[in-house]
Length: 373
Image (cartoon, rainbow, N blue to C red; front, side, top):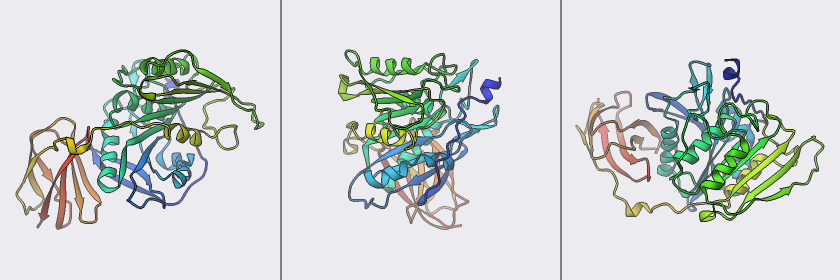
């Protein structure tokens, strides 16, 4: 049980950065939060990528933005999203529903984190010019487990993944259905998520073998010893599978003698930079939204005192979103039935836009409502 309480604990502190904004909304009955970083170079005329950065067990979004992905975004022009996990009641620590399992117990197994990430992405698409072929996820420790789960189960929207010290959890079965570019970083002396003998999922090299097999990578990897310049007692070996279906490369950075850490500019490689270098090589062509039929719905009464009925022609993989006239999302909920009640009584009087979004392809229908109480 002690190991369960220390499972994947990550506390990274590389500094605090300005120009981040914090957002929250209700998803699946829980208040969910995330930090958004939009670089100054964003002007709306060019579609930009999105990078999700997922913290480890017991860590938080404020601390984890310290990996410095925003500095890379300033140069490369992409949006950074750092979400917050929900506290698991057993361990009293923030934890993703990542599939990482110990003695049969999977933390936060009832929390819909994948839906939460999809809701964030839909919000970005509604408010920014997003390149939907270049949406990526990276994570540390339990965030790495969660990132691999996204590679398994959300790869219709996530183009490529990069995990640090987190693999595929033993609590899930991974059946990706397509070739997924994957990059993994792991220290051989990791005392939390063992390089070999991982207690919570597959081992580091087994993870890489899984993705290489899934991606139909031919032959053996190209193995390179990176220059050992910094005096940190660490050496790094890079393995690259490049002959894979759809160009979906698989990479491993094995860091000899490294514990459960995120390498920084003080080391021979900076994980944050290497992750973006990997991401920028990959994308996938999603189905054009112009070829898809958006979900249709009716809404009444309108004007309303805040209590509305909504009739929807599709229930699965859909969400309801309400946006005010300033473009701020003020309400989010899953679609649970063909007819359901929408309670907006807490919102001030005024005009709003109700969207019903297909969470799989991002298409949506919109209706304007007026609240008069």
